[in-house]
Image 1 (cartoon, helix red, strand yellow):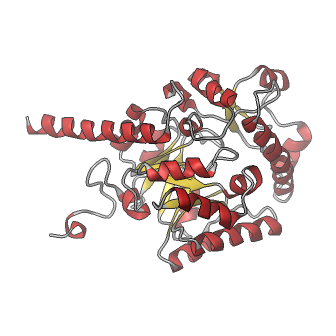
Image 2: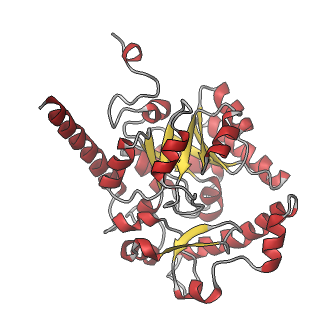
Image 3: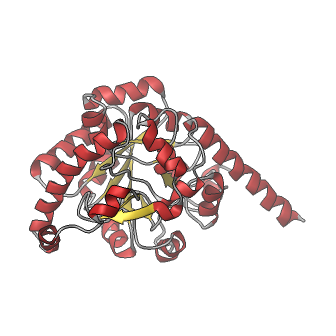
Length: 349
Protein backbone atom coordinates (compact mmCIF):
# COMPACT_ATOMS: atom_id res chain seq x y z
CA UNK A 1 0.00 0.00 0.00
CA UNK A 2 1.11 3.57 -0.59
CA UNK A 3 1.86 5.87 2.33
CA UNK A 4 -1.22 7.98 1.62
CA UNK A 5 -3.43 4.91 1.90
CA UNK A 6 -2.25 3.97 5.35
CA UNK A 7 -1.60 7.24 7.20
CA UNK A 8 -4.03 10.03 8.09
CA UNK A 9 -2.96 13.48 6.85
CA UNK A 10 -2.83 14.67 10.47
CA UNK A 11 -1.90 11.58 12.46
CA UNK A 12 1.88 11.26 12.87
CA UNK A 13 3.39 8.09 11.41
CA UNK A 14 6.16 8.67 13.98
CA UNK A 15 7.61 11.49 16.04
CA UNK A 16 9.62 12.57 12.99
CA UNK A 17 7.00 11.96 10.30
CA UNK A 18 4.15 14.39 10.87
CA UNK A 19 1.80 16.71 9.01
CA UNK A 20 4.41 19.47 9.39
CA UNK A 21 7.22 17.47 7.81
CA UNK A 22 4.92 16.55 4.91
CA UNK A 23 3.60 20.09 4.43
CA UNK A 24 7.05 21.68 4.55
CA UNK A 25 8.96 18.89 2.79
CA UNK A 26 11.42 18.51 5.66
CA UNK A 27 12.88 15.59 7.64
CA UNK A 28 12.49 16.77 11.22
CA UNK A 29 9.37 18.54 12.56
CA UNK A 30 11.30 21.54 13.82
CA UNK A 31 11.03 25.17 12.71
CA UNK A 32 13.79 27.66 13.44
CA UNK A 33 11.42 30.57 14.01
CA UNK A 34 11.90 33.94 12.36
CA UNK A 35 13.56 36.44 14.71
CA UNK A 36 14.15 40.14 14.39
CA UNK A 37 17.04 40.88 14.43
CA UNK A 38 18.69 37.47 14.81
CA UNK A 39 17.65 35.58 11.64
CA UNK A 40 20.78 35.97 9.56
CA UNK A 41 20.95 34.01 6.27
CA UNK A 42 23.52 31.55 7.61
CA UNK A 43 21.29 30.60 10.55
CA UNK A 44 18.24 30.10 8.33
CA UNK A 45 20.26 27.94 5.94
CA UNK A 46 21.87 25.90 8.73
CA UNK A 47 18.50 24.97 10.23
CA UNK A 48 17.18 23.80 6.87
CA UNK A 49 20.37 22.00 5.92
CA UNK A 50 20.17 20.03 9.19
CA UNK A 51 16.69 18.75 8.28
CA UNK A 52 14.48 21.32 9.97
CA UNK A 53 12.96 24.46 8.45
CA UNK A 54 14.73 27.79 8.63
CA UNK A 55 12.32 30.71 8.34
CA UNK A 56 13.36 34.08 6.91
CA UNK A 57 12.42 37.25 8.80
CA UNK A 58 12.33 39.76 5.90
CA UNK A 59 12.96 42.97 7.87
CA UNK A 60 15.91 41.30 9.57
CA UNK A 61 17.28 40.12 6.23
CA UNK A 62 17.03 43.56 4.64
CA UNK A 63 17.44 46.13 7.41
CA UNK A 64 19.73 44.32 9.84
CA UNK A 65 21.86 42.11 7.61
CA UNK A 66 21.91 44.48 4.66
CA UNK A 67 20.66 42.33 1.79
CA UNK A 68 18.40 43.23 -1.06
CA UNK A 69 15.53 40.85 -0.32
CA UNK A 70 15.89 38.73 -3.46
CA UNK A 71 19.67 38.64 -3.13
CA UNK A 72 19.29 37.54 0.49
CA UNK A 73 17.10 34.61 -0.52
CA UNK A 74 19.63 33.65 -3.17
CA UNK A 75 22.42 33.84 -0.58
CA UNK A 76 20.51 31.30 1.52
CA UNK A 77 20.04 29.14 -1.58
CA UNK A 78 23.82 29.11 -2.05
CA UNK A 79 24.11 27.57 1.42
CA UNK A 80 21.30 25.01 1.19
CA UNK A 81 19.00 23.60 -1.45
CA UNK A 82 16.53 22.37 1.17
CA UNK A 83 13.17 24.08 1.85
CA UNK A 84 13.03 27.39 3.70
CA UNK A 85 10.08 29.44 4.89
CA UNK A 86 9.11 33.10 5.07
CA UNK A 87 7.60 34.95 8.01
CA UNK A 88 4.90 37.48 7.11
CA UNK A 89 3.51 39.81 9.78
CA UNK A 90 0.17 40.68 8.22
CA UNK A 91 -1.07 43.44 10.55
CA UNK A 92 -2.47 46.24 8.36
CA UNK A 93 -0.78 49.06 10.29
CA UNK A 94 0.05 51.04 7.15
CA UNK A 95 -0.37 50.72 3.40
CA UNK A 96 3.37 51.20 2.85
CA UNK A 97 4.17 48.31 5.17
CA UNK A 98 1.48 46.05 3.70
CA UNK A 99 2.63 46.75 0.14
CA UNK A 100 6.19 45.92 1.15
CA UNK A 101 5.12 42.60 2.68
CA UNK A 102 3.14 41.72 -0.46
CA UNK A 103 6.19 42.43 -2.58
CA UNK A 104 8.33 40.22 -0.33
CA UNK A 105 5.83 37.36 -0.62
CA UNK A 106 5.72 37.66 -4.41
CA UNK A 107 9.52 37.65 -4.65
CA UNK A 108 9.77 34.69 -2.27
CA UNK A 109 7.34 32.71 -4.41
CA UNK A 110 9.35 33.57 -7.52
CA UNK A 111 12.46 32.30 -5.70
CA UNK A 112 10.81 28.99 -4.83
CA UNK A 113 9.62 29.51 -1.25
CA UNK A 114 6.50 27.43 -0.57
CA UNK A 115 6.03 27.63 3.20
CA UNK A 116 4.83 30.74 5.02
CA UNK A 117 4.40 31.56 8.71
CA UNK A 118 1.96 34.43 9.27
CA UNK A 119 1.09 36.40 12.38
CA UNK A 120 -0.73 39.43 13.84
CA UNK A 121 -3.57 39.79 11.38
CA UNK A 122 -5.75 38.10 8.78
CA UNK A 123 -3.56 36.01 6.46
CA UNK A 124 -6.06 35.67 3.60
CA UNK A 125 -3.94 37.42 0.98
CA UNK A 126 -0.87 35.30 1.86
CA UNK A 127 -2.96 32.13 1.66
CA UNK A 128 -4.30 33.12 -1.76
CA UNK A 129 -0.80 33.67 -3.15
CA UNK A 130 0.68 30.56 -1.52
CA UNK A 131 -2.10 28.19 -2.50
CA UNK A 132 -1.91 29.37 -6.12
CA UNK A 133 1.55 27.75 -6.34
CA UNK A 134 0.89 24.76 -4.07
CA UNK A 135 2.33 26.39 -0.97
CA UNK A 136 1.31 26.11 2.68
CA UNK A 137 0.54 28.75 5.32
CA UNK A 138 0.74 28.20 9.09
CA UNK A 139 -0.58 31.01 11.29
CA UNK A 140 0.58 32.06 14.77
CA UNK A 141 -2.17 32.01 17.41
CA UNK A 142 -2.28 32.31 21.18
CA UNK A 143 -5.85 31.12 21.81
CA UNK A 144 -8.86 29.53 20.16
CA UNK A 145 -10.65 32.71 19.06
CA UNK A 146 -7.69 33.72 16.88
CA UNK A 147 -7.42 30.20 15.53
CA UNK A 148 -11.07 30.28 14.47
CA UNK A 149 -10.58 33.60 12.69
CA UNK A 150 -7.51 32.31 10.84
CA UNK A 151 -9.40 29.19 9.74
CA UNK A 152 -11.74 31.50 7.82
CA UNK A 153 -8.72 32.35 5.65
CA UNK A 154 -8.18 28.65 4.80
CA UNK A 155 -4.78 28.38 6.49
CA UNK A 156 -3.06 24.97 6.47
CA UNK A 157 -1.79 24.80 10.03
CA UNK A 158 -1.49 26.64 13.33
CA UNK A 159 1.54 27.61 15.38
CA UNK A 160 0.33 27.66 18.97
CA UNK A 161 2.40 30.23 20.87
CA UNK A 162 2.35 29.45 24.58
CA UNK A 163 3.20 31.32 27.76
CA UNK A 164 6.84 30.18 27.75
CA UNK A 165 7.66 31.67 24.33
CA UNK A 166 10.10 34.45 23.59
CA UNK A 167 8.96 37.58 21.77
CA UNK A 168 5.19 38.02 21.91
CA UNK A 169 4.30 35.18 24.27
CA UNK A 170 0.83 33.77 24.79
CA UNK A 171 -1.03 33.27 28.07
CA UNK A 172 -1.73 29.53 27.97
CA UNK A 173 0.52 26.54 28.57
CA UNK A 174 1.40 24.08 25.81
CA UNK A 175 -0.98 21.55 27.36
CA UNK A 176 -3.84 24.03 27.54
CA UNK A 177 -3.35 25.04 23.91
CA UNK A 178 -3.35 21.50 22.52
CA UNK A 179 -6.50 20.79 24.53
CA UNK A 180 -8.09 23.99 23.22
CA UNK A 181 -7.12 23.54 19.58
CA UNK A 182 -6.79 19.78 19.16
CA UNK A 183 -10.30 19.26 17.78
CA UNK A 184 -9.81 21.61 14.82
CA UNK A 185 -8.59 18.89 12.43
CA UNK A 186 -5.54 20.89 11.38
CA UNK A 187 -1.82 20.48 12.15
CA UNK A 188 -0.70 22.33 15.28
CA UNK A 189 2.93 23.28 15.95
CA UNK A 190 3.99 24.04 19.52
CA UNK A 191 6.00 27.21 20.14
CA UNK A 192 7.54 28.26 23.42
CA UNK A 193 9.73 26.80 26.14
CA UNK A 194 11.61 24.26 24.02
CA UNK A 195 15.26 24.52 24.99
CA UNK A 196 16.57 20.96 24.89
CA UNK A 197 15.87 17.59 23.31
CA UNK A 198 13.67 16.44 26.19
CA UNK A 199 11.39 19.46 25.74
CA UNK A 200 11.23 18.59 22.04
CA UNK A 201 10.09 15.03 22.68
CA UNK A 202 7.62 16.15 25.34
CA UNK A 203 5.88 18.53 22.92
CA UNK A 204 5.63 15.84 20.23
CA UNK A 205 4.21 13.41 22.80
CA UNK A 206 1.46 15.90 23.61
CA UNK A 207 0.18 15.54 20.05
CA UNK A 208 1.78 18.50 18.32
CA UNK A 209 2.84 18.09 14.68
CA UNK A 210 6.14 19.80 15.41
CA UNK A 211 7.85 22.60 17.29
CA UNK A 212 8.94 26.14 16.57
CA UNK A 213 12.04 27.38 18.41
CA UNK A 214 13.80 30.73 18.51
CA UNK A 215 15.82 31.38 21.66
CA UNK A 216 17.77 28.11 21.43
CA UNK A 217 19.06 29.12 17.96
CA UNK A 218 20.31 32.53 19.05
CA UNK A 219 22.88 30.72 21.20
CA UNK A 220 24.48 29.03 18.19
CA UNK A 221 27.82 29.50 16.50
CA UNK A 222 26.30 30.53 13.16
CA UNK A 223 23.94 33.18 14.54
CA UNK A 224 25.47 36.65 14.17
CA UNK A 225 24.04 37.99 17.43
CA UNK A 226 26.77 39.37 19.68
CA UNK A 227 28.56 36.93 21.97
CA UNK A 228 27.26 38.86 25.00
CA UNK A 229 23.66 38.19 23.92
CA UNK A 230 24.36 34.49 23.38
CA UNK A 231 26.09 34.19 26.75
CA UNK A 232 23.21 35.99 28.46
CA UNK A 233 20.89 33.27 27.15
CA UNK A 234 23.23 30.51 28.35
CA UNK A 235 23.53 32.11 31.79
CA UNK A 236 19.82 32.91 32.24
CA UNK A 237 17.33 30.80 34.16
CA UNK A 238 13.58 30.60 33.63
CA UNK A 239 12.94 33.12 36.41
CA UNK A 240 15.07 35.70 34.61
CA UNK A 241 12.49 36.01 31.80
CA UNK A 242 9.97 38.82 32.22
CA UNK A 243 7.36 40.50 30.02
CA UNK A 244 7.72 44.15 28.99
CA UNK A 245 5.34 46.42 27.08
CA UNK A 246 8.10 48.90 26.30
CA UNK A 247 9.21 47.28 23.04
CA UNK A 248 6.00 47.03 21.03
CA UNK A 249 3.15 48.08 23.31
CA UNK A 250 2.12 44.48 23.98
CA UNK A 251 3.97 42.08 26.31
CA UNK A 252 7.29 40.81 24.95
CA UNK A 253 9.47 38.27 26.76
CA UNK A 254 12.98 39.51 27.55
CA UNK A 255 15.82 38.75 29.94
CA UNK A 256 15.60 40.73 33.18
CA UNK A 257 18.33 43.37 33.44
CA UNK A 258 19.08 46.22 35.91
CA UNK A 259 17.88 48.71 33.27
CA UNK A 260 14.55 46.91 32.98
CA UNK A 261 14.19 46.95 36.75
CA UNK A 262 14.81 50.71 36.69
CA UNK A 263 12.38 51.71 33.92
CA UNK A 264 9.70 49.12 34.64
CA UNK A 265 7.81 46.91 32.21
CA UNK A 266 4.59 48.86 31.64
CA UNK A 267 3.85 51.25 28.79
CA UNK A 268 3.38 54.90 29.80
CA UNK A 269 -0.11 56.37 30.41
CA UNK A 270 -0.39 58.04 26.98
CA UNK A 271 0.74 54.87 25.22
CA UNK A 272 -1.73 52.76 27.21
CA UNK A 273 -4.57 55.14 26.28
CA UNK A 274 -3.64 55.00 22.59
CA UNK A 275 -3.29 51.22 22.63
CA UNK A 276 -6.89 50.91 23.82
CA UNK A 277 -8.28 52.85 20.84
CA UNK A 278 -9.48 51.03 17.72
CA UNK A 279 -7.60 53.46 15.41
CA UNK A 280 -4.91 54.86 17.67
CA UNK A 281 -3.59 51.42 18.65
CA UNK A 282 -2.18 50.98 15.13
CA UNK A 283 -0.40 54.36 15.27
CA UNK A 284 1.02 53.58 18.70
CA UNK A 285 2.22 50.15 17.61
CA UNK A 286 3.88 51.68 14.57
CA UNK A 287 5.64 54.26 16.75
CA UNK A 288 6.79 51.54 19.12
CA UNK A 289 7.94 49.40 16.21
CA UNK A 290 10.06 52.13 14.63
CA UNK A 291 11.73 52.79 17.97
CA UNK A 292 12.18 49.16 18.98
CA UNK A 293 13.43 47.84 15.63
CA UNK A 294 16.45 50.11 15.88
CA UNK A 295 17.01 49.36 19.55
CA UNK A 296 16.74 45.60 19.13
CA UNK A 297 19.07 45.69 16.15
CA UNK A 298 21.71 47.52 18.17
CA UNK A 299 21.19 45.31 21.22
CA UNK A 300 21.83 42.14 19.26
CA UNK A 301 24.86 43.14 17.23
CA UNK A 302 27.13 44.99 19.66
CA UNK A 303 28.45 44.42 23.15
CA UNK A 304 25.79 44.27 25.83
CA UNK A 305 24.75 47.70 27.09
CA UNK A 306 22.96 48.47 30.35
CA UNK A 307 20.00 49.80 28.33
CA UNK A 308 19.52 46.82 26.03
CA UNK A 309 16.44 44.65 25.64
CA UNK A 310 17.45 41.02 25.06
CA UNK A 311 14.50 39.00 23.78
CA UNK A 312 14.36 35.40 24.98
CA UNK A 313 11.83 32.84 26.17
CA UNK A 314 11.72 30.53 29.16
CA UNK A 315 13.47 27.87 27.08
CA UNK A 316 16.70 29.46 28.41
CA UNK A 317 16.35 26.89 31.18
CA UNK A 318 17.42 24.18 28.71
CA UNK A 319 20.24 26.13 27.00
CA UNK A 320 23.59 25.29 28.54
CA UNK A 321 26.09 26.02 25.77
CA UNK A 322 26.61 27.85 22.50
CA UNK A 323 26.52 25.06 19.91
CA UNK A 324 26.25 24.51 16.18
CA UNK A 325 22.74 24.54 14.73
CA UNK A 326 23.31 21.17 13.07
CA UNK A 327 24.43 19.52 16.31
CA UNK A 328 21.34 20.76 18.13
CA UNK A 329 18.91 19.52 15.50
CA UNK A 330 20.70 16.18 15.13
CA UNK A 331 20.60 15.61 18.89
CA UNK A 332 16.90 16.48 19.03
CA UNK A 333 16.11 14.07 16.21
CA UNK A 334 18.18 11.24 17.68
CA UNK A 335 16.54 11.64 21.08
CA UNK A 336 13.11 11.45 19.44
CA UNK A 337 14.11 8.29 17.54
CA UNK A 338 15.47 6.64 20.68
CA UNK A 339 12.37 7.53 22.67
CA UNK A 340 10.18 6.07 19.96
CA UNK A 341 12.18 2.83 20.04
CA UNK A 342 11.81 2.65 23.82
CA UNK A 343 8.05 3.13 23.55
CA UNK A 344 7.85 0.39 20.93
CA UNK A 345 9.86 -2.02 23.07
CA UNK A 346 7.71 -1.24 26.12
CA UNK A 347 4.52 -1.76 24.12
CA UNK A 348 5.79 -5.07 22.73
CA UNK A 349 6.76 -6.28 26.19
